[in-house]
Length: 230
Image 1 (spheres, rainbow, N blue to C red):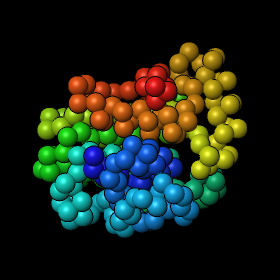
Image 2: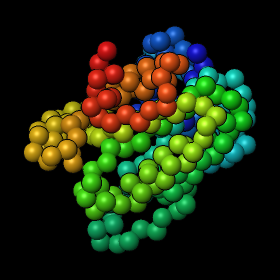
Image 3: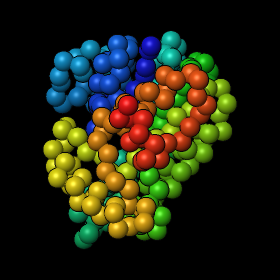
């Protein structure tokens, strides 16, 4: 199988690339960074491309022979939240939620439809109810708009993942933090889902992408944990 990962140098993207290589897939990543800051044996087998996912000209060649596409691009904060406590930082379009979350998804989806890929995977976010709307309203709004854009397409199967907090060895600080998140999830009536290992998310995503017997799906935290542990 041939996979294109948009945002493969990010935290989730690296996990997706590694899992795909483990499965023997041919993997290409597109990101502005190009190559991850650190490499391992699995990541060395990925073809790393440097470019902007906001540039529609990069897609035809990258999409032309891909079976699957996974969109992992996103940012939790448009600007430094500590800096913004005392001075408002202007937001550039290319670093905005709209650009990174919604517009890159829209361009990729259009190209994937033209290239006749088999399935498109999107790493979205868990819905936190009032918590999400209060803490990160712009982030949650753009995630929702991106999902709507993807679901309107009928040219390929869609797999939407909605993980909450993710942890993994690439970001050691997330491991102790995940314990607090999971503990808190026990007392929030589902508004704060338990933490998931980023490798579990990657396994669930690629398993669903490669299952041609299933219809398009939107996977919540419980679904991801179940499929990713098989």
